[in-house]
Length: 380
Image 1 (tube, rainbow, N blue to C red):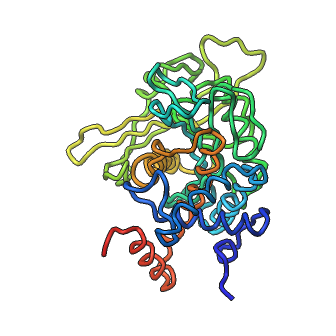
Image 2: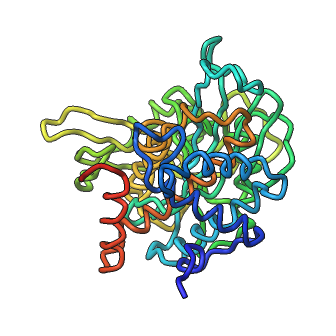
């Protein structure tokens, strides 16, 4: 008897049998999309059955018995197994935001204005697990979609009230910590989390963020900007790294600062954290990137902290995969944010299975890779 997709990967799914079968078909279809057909995904059926398949997909995404948590079960199952298989002592949870522009989609009535009047659609906040040793993506472990009416979350079926970026992020972080994955998490956020007050809220949760050069901290008894603090550090060459697909030379140095802004009055002593200056140059010494990093992870080398931050770019690549290089997200024809998020969860499971397939060199995996290439229409 042929095993189903979920059985092959030992993934949990509490959808009733008929809906589970449809869900697995949709996941397979999202593993074969390309730029010309992504808005409607490539049906695995004969072309004469395509319309019936489209109708079945519409019914699935509008079925009240298909909830966000139910759809997220296989995604979180992949996250759990991926973390368990990782050889890293820590696993990174990269967080970021992405604007999904649907300005030309007049049927979507729950769009929200984002950066300007023409930038309307939905805002996606996503969390991607990344292997701390290799930088390889493991699986998404959190999806929030901001609309004009509120926030849809993969972990709850109910529409949530709007929140600030950091409040929404920290709610996600605390939920992810309660997943009790096999290894401790380090939550990696860009400069969005450059707030001493908010970082103190995280308590014992492990975090890594980038700070602005003008942000102040208490260092050696005085308040100084990050830029001035960095001048007291002599970074050492640590080796060659990959940054957004390009190689560069990594220089790293560190000191300790207190999470206390000059403008703040605190009733008690502020916690300390690591201040890591990271510099990347090309082979001619031209500066490619300079980061002032903060982290409360104490038992790893500063070079590892800097390398972890470099791994954060994986979530940007994942957004690119969703929007342009594979799934063509901004062309999707679903008319509500609820349906869009359901399809996003479906696509997330598909991309995670591709991640696993890419790293698997077994004969069975290579055979399936060839099948997907033929199915995509890339080659005759």
